[in-house]
Length: 169
Image 1 (cartoon, helix red, strand yellow):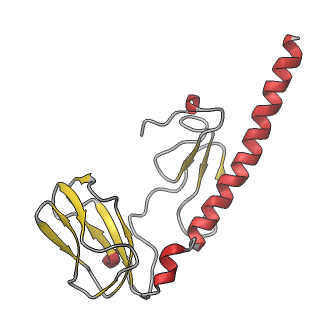
Image 2: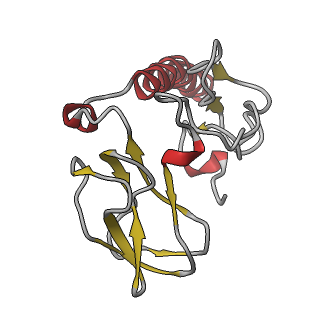
């Protein structure tokens, strides 16, 4: 991924693709379940399941993917209430329809070039617009893990630097 420990005094990765102690100083588990938000100081997090969390019986169905390679152009904004089949965006000249009724909870940044089948958005069938602008339970748990790792790793880095200063003086 191009991330490495020497990029900063403390480097933290989120989810699959990172190995604590090799690429980064710590990895935060992003897979839902008992380990969500757990700090890993050695080793890898759980593998990507490829399956989004279940919302009202929908998992993969609510994810919007690019029909082909191209540049994404938004047709609606995050927070828009849509019906199944309503256009969400375009990839090149192709309109990308909503997979179900709900609220547009996520869209990849406008004017992003994407490959075929790339995740470009998601629709929440609950249709609660306010949820688009609040921190989710998953994001809050992951943020808690990042805070925990920062507290431990920054203090450890500070102690090591201080010890080095004392030894060199």
